[in-house]
Image 1 (cartoon, rainbow, N blue to C red):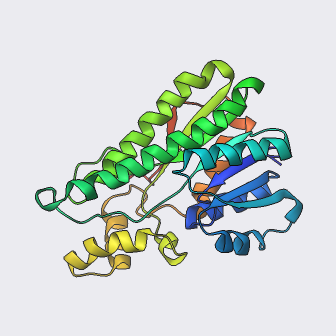
Image 2 (image 1 turned 60 degrees about the vertical axis):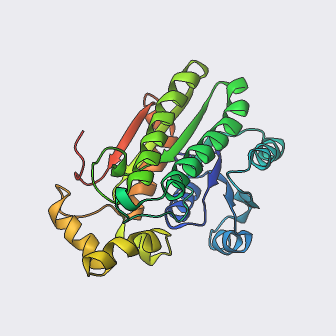
Length: 265
């Protein structure tokens, strides 16, 4: 198993993407420390995993520096190390509003939230990874980090910031054997059915176009990606397993392009 004997903290573990990554990590042999704001939802998901001895849950706000540091210390006290830290947290934010009408507050909210939480969670893990000179940090972005367009300025900037942090994490921590990789999938249709906050986020844009979210994503799948489809949750999860494993030990400071070709490097 690729992640046997690895201890992994997954922030946003009960979300659509987080739960799929968590399940894939579990199948790959990792000991999971699942983190989210809703303990009941976390516990319900954790109960679906077969080996309960390799699963712990905790309600922690990823934007609360002290709470994240405290939880990281508790993980090390219990398991001995943090080998992998994954941040796939997501929050509702405003999209579909043109620049001329966008408030400063709505513009800054995703920037402040995503940059803050990725900094806090990575730093909390890094402090425990540095002494043992190994570890992997994983984050998640979207093509919005590079694409021009209307209606996603704040989130686009947040994604650009996450990818910039990824490069800086790699630069700061590489000498300690710590790798940092960002995953960049395009929109994932099945995530909406799985309860992702993206449904609420996309609602304004689809309503303005007079079509359903499903129709909007289907049109994008045919017009944007070279593969004429959008990525699946399983594809994102399997890539996360590989990037967190020793098979990817030469990979750091990069973005894994999971856009099915809607964005070409």
